[in-house]
Image 1: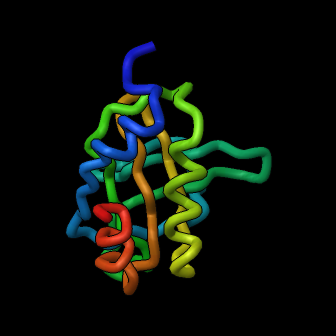
Image 2: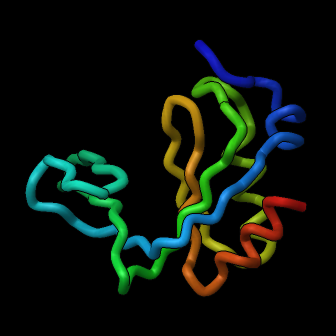
Length: 116
């Protein structure tokens, strides 16, 4: 599996990027992504859609580091850092990068923590 697995190297190379769009995380009725939608997640209770939304309450921070899906500790380390500041971290892992959704009003603070 490609990507970095070593936690210390992952943390040293995070390279977080704050996206300009606001996002909503809501229930979806159809299992298809529309143009510009970020992700759809299928759960037993239904579908969750993550998409850009001008009235959305979430900001997306993408990590530039190419992390392996079987890397151990990255999600825990990042969510712990943000939790210490009282910032919710909703993390979506993809094949190459992780994406953290944080409260819109705390996005700059979250970015500063991740850069620190």
